[in-house]
Length: 621
Image (cartoon, rainbow, N blue to C red; front, side, top):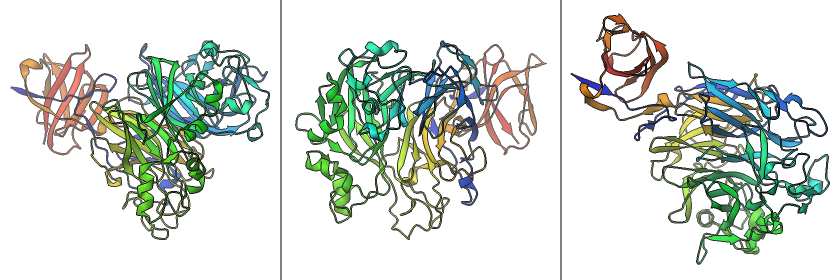
């Protein structure tokens, strides 16, 4: 007697090294789908946080007592911090890019934090909490005002692959106090300039006590504690830039950072000790460096960090066209970045080139192919691309080019018949065993040149999945799994487990039907259903001691479970086809209804209530 065995479990436990994600692509009528959040036929969606609708718990701010306020809008980055000490999944952190003044929640952008678990049906549930500062509820405003000073436009950020530590990026670059809308424009004193100083106020003794202008306290990567919904530190030692994305490598020392500017510089911080990011070296990438492609700066003085971009320019750093999100693949150690593009960038980076910075080689090649030069206003970069940095070779290259190019007036197509990648922005990695996938999100810079079908003026951004095993991928290799409501961008995604990801939709049209008229944080479930594995066939019964009977087998309608002649209830019931795709699951039961299934051979996997595994082959006829 032989049995079949399927090796597939939740990612938080283990996933087959050969797991592959194979999702069906969605199809939608353009007049309907731009009004809703649509997704792959394999996925289900769940609204988690609605900006302007859900209520967050606040701390005492600007002299006001602790209380409640509506969550801010424009959800951008979403991070996830696992809970390793309970059965809950962990904490979610959501950035708010929209800048507004708010006497209760804090001026500028901000963040919302909340905790999640899963119910027996696999849906997410928000866990009520009571924090150390006494706040109780489901959603919590992250306190910046009382710890590190106000925050700006909170765009991208970092979720560490090592331990889920969270940083938020303050992209909104300010050049003077006149450019900020702040109730308090007094100079800021680092480490002692807030009503209640964080424990980390002495993290940077070389900076503590330094007085800076208020606008100079914006534009840093800022670490937060999602468990207590409080900002911990502004990473002054990483420099002041219009940050968008970043990634912590698996050594827990190396941090890669991107800046959303033209020019945008690629930056690396290396900590002196693993996990301690308060001390280390900072450098900028220079692709034509003679002895090293990383030019290190002295970060022991605040002046150097305040003027980081100027120092990068004069050091001859490589210029990119709006580096947005940065993600790390733990399976290969490679870094992937979105270079979102700008239609005609010449006017934005020619001055820096004159001061010593150099154009990235791929821009020189693209301009040559267009019959022009990078410094000419005729040079276009409508679609952007995904770049890859290989630490082993120190090379940055194009991994996936946006497009394909469609001349203005020639963009006559519909989403169901052509794939088009425009202005990739959000980027994250989904890992299934030894296989990795990029989650690529659009934020359109315009609607011309194929970024939207001709005659469609509402920007509708899409969410793609890309298998990183594919060599030299093209847009055709992308799997489209979602589109967000009209007017919105899709940005920020993070993997929760093998089955679920979180993703944001921000600043949609206000005349969309609720809740799609507000910024949303959504959960997409069903990734595990799209994960296929190699089935390990013909395992001896001695290796899978079952002692459970299933009948009738072959089955036409209901399949029942028995043990020693008595009906048996099993838990964690899963059924797979012979290609390894999960076709059915339920938390518990004593039967499975096969009546509407295709005649075929299936593999059933479950557990006895005492945890003993049950694996058997079932024939449907």
